[in-house]
Image 1 (spheres, rainbow, N blue to C red):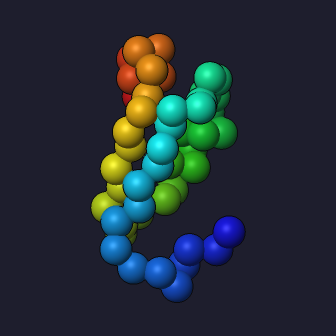
Image 2: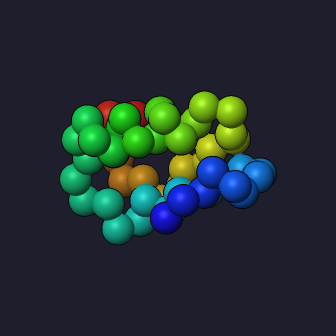
Length: 50
């Protein structure tokens, strides 16, 4: 999905994320450039990693 033409904050629902590696972390960091990003629904393990 290409969101480059959209504006405003991005909201990521992490309820169903059971595993997170450097690929997801890299994606979140790249997405954050110039945009507000909000994460919700992360379990305790994912919150520690973030």
